[in-house]
Image (tube, rainbow over all chains, first blue to last red; front, side, top):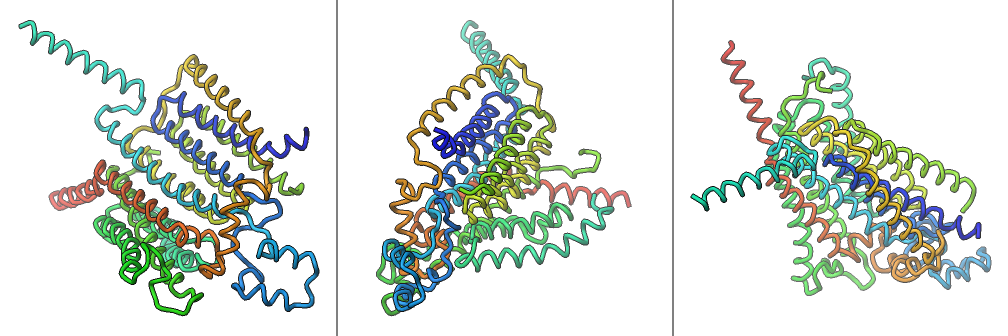
Length: 163
Length: 149
Length: 194
């Protein structure tokens, strides 16, 4: 049981961080604060992905040592009398001598981070434009102004229809 | 606005070339260590952003015009897409780098060339876009006085 | 996982929580933006612990660098403080978040243990990339090889998104001509005053 909890404690902590980001996004009326909450949520999702790609005892997915010497490495390896049995067996099953973490989540998240800042920039640009038109970046105030304008238009239409 | 920030100006003048060189190190060492076009593009953009923050946006716009930054982004994307077309013209699939140069089977020259070119494309696009975005925001701000903080 | 790594994990997670909860309680937007930068930097540190050096590099440069600068720029154009929220509004979001979190935590029971080399995520295509990259591309950094070569289409799409975002921001805010015109106005007024 303790083992089970320890193996998953990281996931739960990340989910906690995600929910903090979600809470900021929901609860805050200020649009910049909302975007900050969204980016916290996003970063937590990145953390979750990278956690899934971690391999125990592995290192960063940059080939080093004999793995980096190209496809000739295996030949060198079998010719080398100094290597001991476990390594040979390992190399035969995996083709690699060292253990590496899974590179695929890293690739996906690397591009997602840069795309994330690009979309954040678009969001901030929209907030700036909203501020210029409404004079406020609190979403409830903006909504109130919108409702006020819509009511006034409705009243005008009513006046025109009756006259 | 910046007349009294002497230390800031001197230090950032020293730092900027180092940042640019580091960006290119990250770019071209990306095959062998952590790094690549995305990171290098951001670092390159940061060197100009530092300049803009210390010396003011108008000065930065004179050094690196916004039109240039926007064109850089477009050129990078075209370069990336062009590598794919080049591979197609040589008889391969889109973005199949093995067809870029003629070589013996098992050779990696085509792969290295392809990766180098598309990473350059990514560098141009990311640095150009980030700089354009920064200019768009910073260019809208009236001059920031110290009391504003 | 050994004791040292676990301690670093706990310390970094604790700091991430402190920063995130501090953001909830803050009202000064300047402090919020700075704390968001700190959050990015802390998560970059955690990426290094989890072997994702490329991701850590990107997060430190992009998350802590550029996005903080952009948020500061946007903050200067809008306002410095958030309006204080009424406490009653926070109850419903809080319940929703607790519920969502509980459902997600229930889902993690089926997930493989942390660092499991035989999990579905780590044993198929990711392992294939690691084994074949040297023969296929000759590039030691597997992340770069997968990013640029195996998944070149994907990266082309991402690059398009970044370009499109740049275009969208320019359409919304312009190229920054305003500061140039402000400058020429100032020059003109200076000349006039002379």
